Length: 562
Image (tube, rainbow, N blue to C red; front, side, top):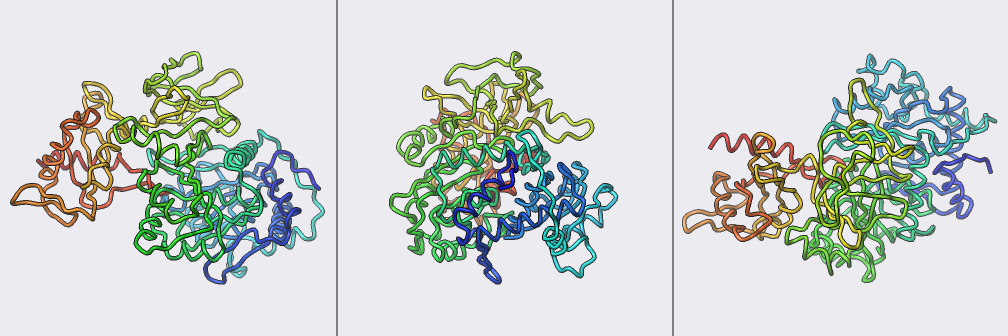
């Protein structure tokens, strides 16, 4: 077998040898296609050789704009084997953000569906180096070399695939931009391999299982591990819009044994199953990732899966994944009671390959680890991590300070500032209290989003809430913007009531709700409660992280009117 060095594509080759005729990928829409592990491995090899014959060189930056599909997964493994550096960006970022992100990478080419090539052509001045362009669409469209022609080049090629080393760049993956402009995170081949091996070790994933892939990144790892990956019919850039009927149909038809999805998907699917009585009886491993998941969603989800199923909540970020993990039983039996009292959200103990510390909060750069101030157990600070799955750098543009603000040098080691605040408990578990950038700095000290919101969310009238700051930094007024629970009508007094359809001023509901938290130490400092007229805005990747920056602007406008 040809050596590819340190490369996650090696695992696919092993899976293809172990179970060549087992389905690797299944599409549940349109023509309902599938591909075996042997076919996937062979096609990835052909395309990798074809890319090299076409002129793509190791570490060339190639933008991949293809929707999650058999072609997408095949192309990911092909580019990994070719030694090229993939550039990946969320389609939900919007055209302007996508163009800005891609232009910052100075791509050498595009492997894209026609709409991606149309964008490249319209903004061609921003992509002057893009000459190795491949069309993943009808071959008659003049948008680059047809993918079939690349495969034909591969069939005729005797080229030796390059050996990729641990430190070689494998991809540039952009963050979702939920708390600022999207940033390009440089993934090395070691990053992908460590992610895969840690996920396999932590959860005991074995070849032969079947995964319902509602989060494409984990779908790639599953395929590499010999796990059949079922791609449901959904918009992967907007998981909260997924049709629960289609998810259930795909899961039960293929008897899935595991599934990765965001809390928004589990919330929607569990509500549907609670009402309909439907179940996924074969589902034994449930993974919720991307944002904290409530105990209510965990309990509902566990009701419609296998009676002995486990639900895991891995914690991490685009820059460092996984960092820690926690199982539902520990949450329900121990930590959730503290969360409801304002202690933050426990995300579990760190994975073996990670080192972590909690240091004093600062918004300034930290040059070296000697400049940090470690905090004792139980004291809230910002989390820093290091390990082989932790990115060492962002792709920096001229004048950018992302690396300066997020990376800390420790000799040859690089620590990453997670941007999250919280504390370590006596069991060395991390309790997440919110994003550092979203803390509210009052004249009496900081307030942290999760410590306040988790208490407010327990109120029967509240579906979700967001703590935001209004006014100048260090003297902000803490405000809770809340979304009404659609199943509850709230009595304000004998004359008025507030419901989701009410046109009453937000301050009316706010005065009433504030009085209900007068005895809560976690919430008593909140000065205003504002009822948001629609669903709270969330991030594009998981549809679960609340956009508090947007809500802070809205809250400021509302208070200025009064």
